[in-house]
Image (cartoon, rainbow, N blue to C red; front, side, top):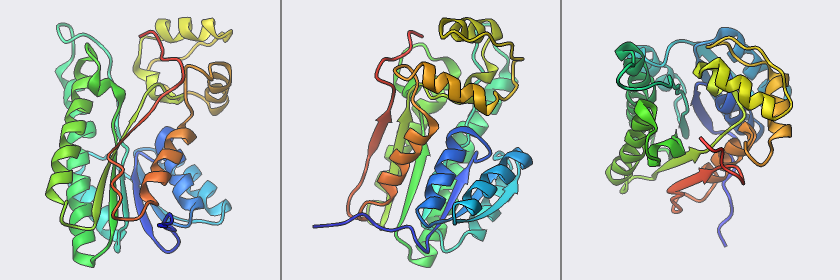
Length: 269
């Protein structure tokens, strides 16, 4: 009977690792024995993630930069050789209508959610092939990619889902597996770009009185409260991280194709 693979002595790259789902994934992989290479835009956030990994007995290397910087992303992936796991987690949403939308915000979503994922995946596959490594490419998508009316963000995640299928076909003769993870509502700062009035109303329904500026990261204690008070409507970042760990520790002949991680009771959005 095949057993789950150990990550001891393996290396993993996680983008968008300064907070939220990316931080949880990085800490989970570090606790499982991997040397985790962290990248994101926020230096302080990366330092906090690396500190948590170190305190848990793991190893972490980090570098702060924008995932849209192709040269730096490629160089960072190269620095993690021999590479065994690549987690394309960096992503963002700018909610709003198309008719009244800002093309520059659309561009940012397309470049972060889609183009950086392509660049990271290509660099990781080349690194794995050159080193003869068995590896996993994990793309953090969203159920928004398969739902109607999810705007430009949903379109970027539909692209991620399609690209995962294409990549899977391209590497099916390699010992490299492409994993697509599609979270539903997760208690993180992801909704920071939503209308503050909507966020305030949702928080009020949970018994929370908050006042947060658009774009500001939510405090960790607030996220913990949301996760606790709305357990049936939000999963935690750690729940997504466990799904990633499950997928990348399977025997290489097993392809965990697509995993949906969502709360028991979907939000009425």
